[in-house]
Amino acid sequence: MIDFRALAEKYDTPLYIYDFEHISRRYEELKKAFSGKKSLISYAIKANSNLSVISHLAQMGSGADCVSIGEVRRALMSGIPKYKIIFSGVGKRDDEIEEALKEDILLLNIESEAEMERVGKIAAELGIAARISIRVNPDIDPGTHPYISTGLHENKFGVDIETAKRMYIQANNSTCLDPVGIHFHIGSQLTELEPIKEAAAIVADLVRSLKAIKVDIRFFDVGGGLGIVYDDEKTIKPYDYAQAIFSVLHGLDVTVVCEPGRFMVGNSGFFLTRVLYEKVNEGKRFIIVDGGMNDLLRPSLYNAYHRVEVLGKSGACSEADLVGPVCESGDFFAKSRMLPATEPGDLVLVHSAGAYGFVMASNYNSRPRPAEVAVIDGKKERCIRVRESFEDLIRLEKMCL
Ligand SMILES: *Cc1c(COP(=O)(O)O)cnc(C)c1O
Image (tube, rainbow, N blue to C red; front, side):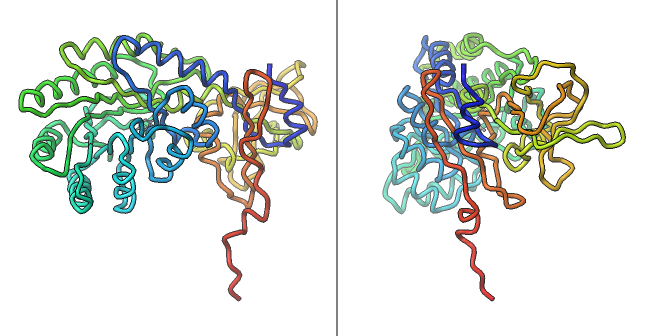
């Protein structure tokens, strides 16, 4: 049991807390599910990019999926070997491409013909062949929130099958491109297996037809997106996930790459905040806490559900909105939730805040970002990012008048 009260005393609130043991269990669970085949688990760093989180996963053998050169640098700094690092993303700058190629990472994920041309040019200038994979958009509706669905033609990610084929042929004929992988990622917080299997089958067929024309795909990257429990979702079991993917790969000798972000860290994390006061407006009850949407944006951005718990209170509950102090009506953590009466100073724990939590935090309203604490082996705790100060907020600003 994590002693949240002690952590609040020591580090103050609002505070992020991550259970590293939980992260280990998730990694092991997924690795085991894929153990029947060559596999690489590349943690999607954007979900939680704290260096300690990455290095914890690096020690377990994880690779990294990065969406900026900053994330590539974090991965390298955290001890992830370069041959386990993938650079994805719909728009990469020339300097990012050049640095990634010089670092000799496993592969660059290409999302358009124009991008492939840029990568080819830069690789030629460096006198190397760039290992690439192409992100295919299999046009599958994953049945998730429109903001986090990415596998339909109407959104900006990847290229369609026909374009991909053309690109592979072109890349195969180029001395500065080495097309070794294929990639798809149909969305986030996926809770149904069927769309993933369908997408994998479409992409596996493409790999077979590429093989017939001498394009030898060695990395079959199924993206991330495995959903987790926030409320009462039925989620996909890692074993079933792996089996579904294996089932479409018959006859193909490939390394399966998967890029889980949320699955790896989401449920390991807590956001701890303190009650400032309660108020009632025309019969509606509000609990106002010291954490805000600038610290944890998911409820405001996606209308996402997070379980919330007032620590040490078990009295009668009534409906309330749990809100922050930021000057926006969208600043809330929970709406119309049954919660006990609170007093100033009570601690409120927001569950499943380990993914897309701190990484989306901002300084809006001149609020310093929270500290982050890791709980190791269930009890030992370490501060893995100190709370920002006012001085941090203004450090880069200049007063020119
Ligand atoms: C965001 C992203 C992931 C991770 O998504 P999760 O839902 O957190 O698992 C993996 N791969 C790519 C290409 C992504 O953009």
